[in-house]
Image 1 (tube, protein in one colour):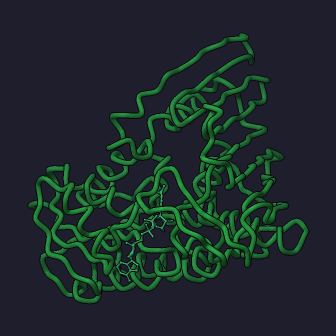
Image 2 (image 1 turned 180 degrees about the vertical axis):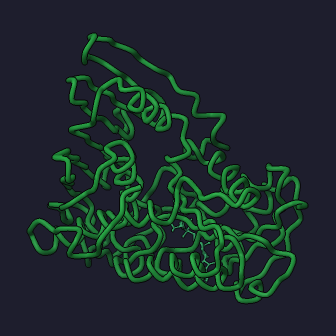
Image 3 (image 1 turned 30 degrees about the vertical axis):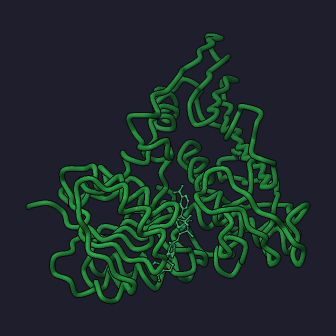
Length: 370
Ligand SMILES: NC(=O)c1ccc[n+]([C@@H]2O[C@H](COP(=O)([O-])OP(=O)(O)OC[C@H]3O[C@@H](n4cnc5c(N)ncnc54)[C@H](O)[C@@H]3O)[C@@H](O)[C@H]2O)c1
């Protein structure tokens, strides 16, 4: 097989990173870009050094292109189903940004299309490809802490980028669906058991519906903007119970200004049955302490070689592994099923907040943990 010929649907904050990252890989070529936002297209083109893609504004023009093997879809969540199903049905391999979709119905329609067409469908759960979380998983595999009994995630941060769709629950699925599917997936991965039920409490402390909220974000290229309509929570505490008795808790705050300046960044920690702890901080370091032999270790992880341009750790490795899946016909580590399992917890959390009760995942759908 020659180079894998790729199209990029949506080149906003995330899609531009993908396009630039794939452009650096010799096994593929950036053949098409589709986005109606001309300034986002221009920004992306300026960063490409190895490809000279054709540009279009309507993805349907690309569906029957024979010189297109795979697409990377980075459009807002409510468009995932429409765009992903169209390309899968056209026989293209798909790398789809997380969450798989903003509703379970859309998620299942996408998975169904991938299975029928026997195409590769990889979800942008980037942490599955990160040196940091792969090391955490390795330490657990080696039995350093025994089974994971308690786990937590502290995601205290600045707001989403000032793009309207994030703040409209009917388009993003809500803050927990949009953001925390990453972290629920890490819980599922490290705990390795079946999530059973979710209890969550959350609401709007600062960014309130109907009020003028000046939204500034530390990593987006969009300028600050006033957003009045916000139907998403800006904080939550969420507990997930697993069928082996393990428990995980996630704290979300989306209104830090100007961003988290405490230096700790994202914190993901766990406690094993032998009383040892392991904590990942700032997407960079892991501390392991206590347990059987009372060890204490601080690890600085290489999170540069697996990413590009200061993007998410694992960002470039996930692209390399997507191409390998196409070449070898193998299933991605961030499979659609893994994405679905994380989405279920997020949807249950959103529902738990509204209904003020435990939501059992079985109420939403039977699930498999892989
Ligand atoms: N993996 C991660 O860590 C991560 C980080 C950020 C965003 N994301 C995901 O990436 C996706 C996009 O997020 P973003 O932050 O880049 O949003 P964004 O708003 O910056 O970009 C979306 C882009 O899609 C374009 N678009 C909209 N409708 C389109 C259509 N029909 N055809 C072609 N282009 C269209 C818009 O013009 C825009 O350029 C979302 O699903 C989001 O959840 C993932």
